[in-house]
Length: 453
Image (tube, rainbow, N blue to C red; front, side, top):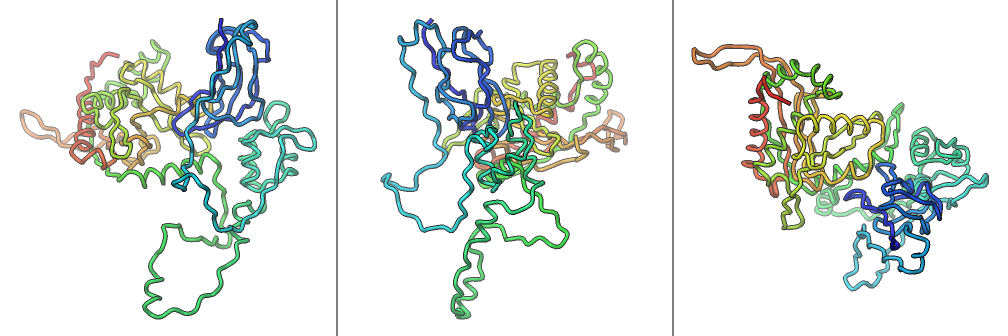
């Protein structure tokens, strides 16, 4: 068996690096195919990297606590005799997070900026506690001293302070973060001469999109965003700046669907061992509509439209801490109702427990969010970039409605719900966006009470 380089796998479109948390195998250990060999952590989830095939772990190329780029070799696996036979494969270059401002590649001097120098924290503290690069980076950005870290009771192996321990600690600590201290230490500009009346009018106009500085009032509580909430906030702002959002609404009569679920849910659970919710039915309807109108299952790259082959449906899920995560059902068009129900229940359960794998929160091509879970009748969801559309399903409510019959119109009690479809007006116009949500509603309204699963 030849020597193989094990690379840090891609873990989603927005994940460029991960921290090595703990090696599960030592050099010289035999490993089976798909057996986990190392634990890693990203900003979103913790997971394990498996061996691509059976063999011997020849060499570990990185250490516990190292921050590794996606595509970088982390270990070599093979037979002992192949150690010198095959060279290490070159590192796959990870995407550069920032582009250079210089057109010719030469560095340009920038104006000095007043800032506070964060406290340098080593890999090990005075008591020998290990701190991962991710924990050290967060601590330095937030102005957490080594003394504070040493006082924390870590939940990791051997009392190691994890990212979660530090993020849980930040809202409880007193004092000012490094970034806040830097802002407060920046000297105020010198007072300018009083301008003319014309200049005053010109200066009164807003000059930037920066949010106004807020001054908390007496008794106000200051709550620092945790790391995930910051990522969500940045992603939502980026989405609004990237895509011109338009939202279309349709009210659907889902009386037959409600009656069908009520009739089959107990037998479904006994036979399949899974609870039957409305979510897999909604996803099935969305998938069918995407097959008929595939131009909502696209992405935009400048002036190029990328039409996605796979139909991967993201389902927004609220976590116990109030944050949001979007697990993805890959190739949802290849699953029947039973398969979708299993996937929905499994992903939702592990999302609440924080047990999702990186690959399970990436690669979505269309997203659904169920605002009806919170009793909301409709919403205007924000597109999950780089997708171009998202649908919100509202609460199902009993309402009086006009029922058309061959003998005249009647007033009856029907189960109805709103569907809200937000889409990127750069590539999805009102006709397509409106017809799509209408088609999803038609599929749900035509659900037969004798439907087989």
